[in-house]
Image (cartoon, rainbow, N blue to C red; front, top):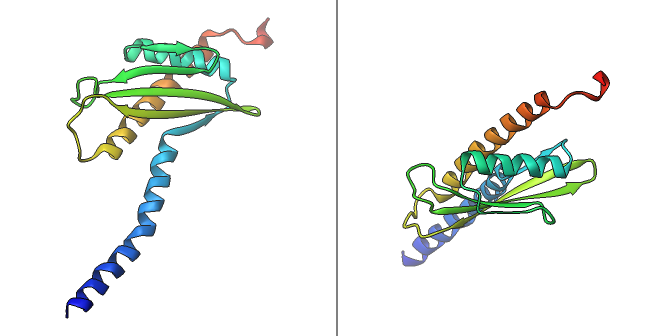
Length: 141
């Protein structure tokens, strides 16, 4: 009887593992985004978003990386976010990295990271559109 119980537990673990791997891949895709914008322009927009909506901690132009805390969703500066731009040919890829900073939160961490990422992408896209409207078109000159 004990052997059957162990076999059932092992079988249920084996069946549940593949979806977890797929879920991890989906979570990472939420935190990585590709843009048709040059890396320098995108970096400047990320600095603008970090300065306007967050508290800019550092910005390194050589590495196109921006660091800022995210104190949203009722947590007091418990996350430090690093946004890194890297050119991928004609496109630019931005990756968000989240690091905990003195937080007792254990449950729902991955979903919280996704929410913070989605909020950041929304703000970045809004800023990019606004900057595009403010920049005069080359065809008008």
